[in-house]
Length: 247
Image (cartoon, rainbow, N blue to C red; front, side):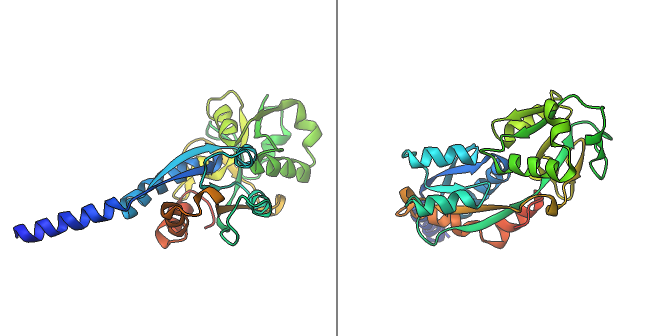
């Protein structure tokens, strides 16, 4: 029995001795799910994912300027493709890890109806969106308003966050009565976690395909490759779906 316990201790030590660390740039909309995934990833592999969340457009500039990120989990598919063309992404490493959904949301119950008709009313003063120039969810929000023919009507009421996390913050605190946010920020296991919302039909904006990529700085890091592999496992996909993404 003692010998068996010793052997198990040695094997555990050997496993953790090869555990590494990976620096990950995570799109703001995926920060919550990625925190959960990072916990699972460390338990299952021993590797630690160190996360930084923010706007994909800002990560693009930082990566080009030498930021030490090894994996990028973007909020779109265009940014990783562009970085690959420019030599900052390991060729062939890109894949779609999630397809996001846009939601018109209020922190209060009963405010947002099933068709988003509240946008046509005078019942709100502020509508929060992410910066459409740097955040794909912001671009999707503008596309939705264009589809509804409401851009000019609501423009005076728009408050713009730097990224989707800030748009959610404006809305969740009530500083904006309505906000276009990522479904993952307000949804868990098939229902809204709080407030009321309208899941915007997918045909009202371009698909929000979110791509992962192995960055050049992570090419020789086994932990970086392990994380990208882990994101494609059934266990990871199930967690991603629980937040309202297609995986």
